[in-house]
Length: 404
Ligand code: NAD
Ligand code: MG
Image (tube, rainbow, N blue to C red):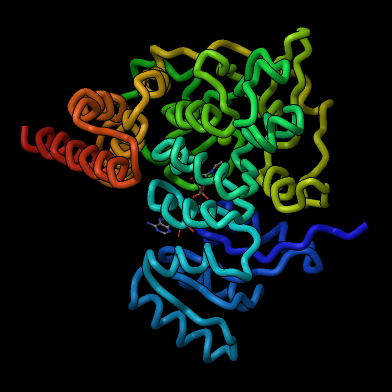
């Protein structure tokens, strides 16, 4: 059998998902070739990755870093060419040689190159959930029009993809979930580090506590999102678009062990689940090799040491961010773009500027109330406008708090 081969651009190569992707790639040099690696600031890490994987291009955000990286690559005898800026990200995501793009930049910043790759019909390995939260309909329209292959990398969505009927996972907009006999999607959530912490102490949560996830090792932004359960809210929105599901067809199930990565319930009462050791290399390897299966380096699931699997209902009072995400999804239009932008500003202020953990949902709710009615969502410019407006409103909210 001929094995799948891909020439890859990895957007966000220096991050948690980027590093795990390169770990899988390194195990299969016959299958995967790296065309471009991108990173925002971690020069030493990107340098080492370029020397190991010898991409044609490396892309960074600013010129100073680009010059330094190019100099050090030359000294080391490397032929990798360094480019910089947003345009360069789009170029390496759309180059004709590239067959697959790992979208692993964090936040709305990842949207443009990911959308551009989708418009050109590449295989998209989608880790950057914010693209779908910001521009879900537009992105799925682009995928459907170009015939791009969209492989979800978020572990829950990857699990759902694996247990859906093939016709629906590959062409989710050709029919409804009900048409293929699916009753609902059960999206699992670990509940994060504060599932059982007394809620009266939430205002005292520190960034160090929030980024310490019990089961997964991830970037800082998604770790805070997991702690507030906004991550699950973003994932509900992500599932809505990936699988052509209505909000009522998606249920969140808290499962603290993160061993069941999600489930699909069928009309006959069957519930199919995907299980595994919590390690992102499993969904990454699945997405890279699809429809084949390859070694990922992930250790076997030890069910005996896991012992038990628990399930409970989510607590929307304890985690108002999850409620806000459901409300934004039901509101539709640009509401989820506003939610996402306000959340990015709130998380940054929590991590860098002393904003209390409990203020994160307060800020988001205030920005949603202020901005949603004045925003539309029929094209990309309108969505980018909603994103910018929400960021501005969030910054004003923060400035007002600081001065009062
Ligand atoms: P991370 O912070 O570890 O890495 C982010 C990457 O994006 C880095 O390479 C960084 O240099 C780059 N980057 C940051 N800002 C940028 C900008 N403005 N422009 C260009 N590049 C920029 O994040 P991560 O944990 O790897 O997550 C990446 C994405 O994958 C997020 O959207 C996250 O929600 C999603 N995701 C991550 C995990 C996980 O286990 N880490 C799981 C599911 C989904
Ligand atoms: Mg996830």
